[in-house]
Image 1 (tube, rainbow, N blue to C red):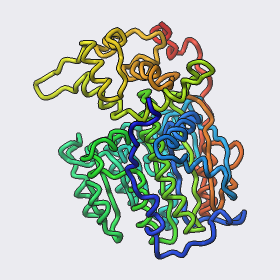
Image 2 (image 1 turned 90 degrees about the vertical axis):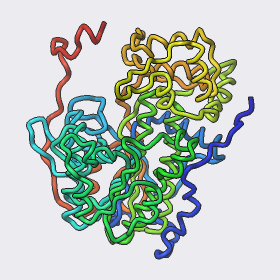
Image 3 (image 1 turned 60 degrees about the vertical axis):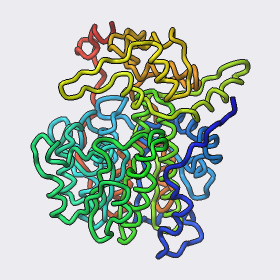
Image 4 (image 1 turned 180 degrees about the horizontal axis):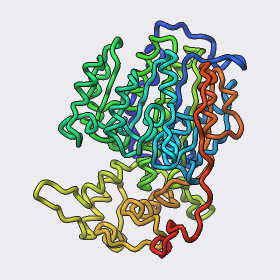
Length: 503
């Protein structure tokens, strides 16, 4: 087969136009020329959630195939004035962090237990980065492809919660007065969907927020109001689905589009801090869905390109690009004689039309009112669904291996692969060459890059809690949250290592 029978169409179309987006500011020669010791008045913190170094590598390789150029993040390694390092993202309770503990370590300067948001084990709530920056007169923004109430944005602005407390996170944003909120999660603001029936949308409107529901609303959003944009009931669609569905592409903005509009609004103010999250990279990796993860990584990179252009025009901008943890640890495996088959297999990602999420809807349809649809168990039908979505023509014998997992009766050799999506990922590895270690987070040290005033602070090997201290110090804020000692190793008789888990 040819390397590509289909061009992957970029959803943003914004990078080439980004210079025109900020016409009121004259462009300096290059913002990278900032001197050591200078301090920023604008901070942009970009997070590719769940990205491992292998995900970054393969997204770059896929970008070359799909759009004939690599990733801006890797190009930054050739830029003068850019600094690069590794960061330890462990949480208070584990070498492996979750997203809420990870973001809270940046958002408070203290490590916390996985599953919580800016609260210590003894109940002490931590003062957040966005509280401190708001008190100091900085404008604040959160932009994500997940629910806006999800763990990573929440870690910068909310506290004293479990990460699942999305309804409370929605109201805490209102209490904080965060100026820009763009992402998904409409159900946590809608009184007809909230458990407490609280009319949060009206409360936002009363506090002078413009409520944005689709791309057209974002494009026309008034710059003199705060923004609450919720563009989907839950998370925004994966890029691979967004690209192949014209209705989604028209109604739901890309991460690059949201980022550009957020910067247009925030640039009207002297000082601001903005978090931009490519959150669905993590979800794709959890599902062992290479196409979903890698195309979302490319979409994240297009948002980074918008930020880099902004930073070129605003020399007082510090750009920090990182991830909160690795997920699934994928790898393009050497296949064939002298590994010659690997490039051909990898190019099959260009043929994928839908994420595993969409495949699951067909294999195991969600329950409807007064109706419980039967999952698809006919191997021939399973094979047809996979071929239509992915382009991979599997035999009925291979399709039959999925049936126990569709029926939730599967028996994997490794417990962490006991999901239908992980089994789909292993099946797809025969088609794309991309294998996975699990559907869980891993303990890798993560890459971090920075450019602009203060960028040198992020070079070398740093701790996750250093980010909070660097940001507050650069903003002239003298504050330190309390901390708790790291939780010790788990003993064999603690009950966590149960016979069931090791069975």
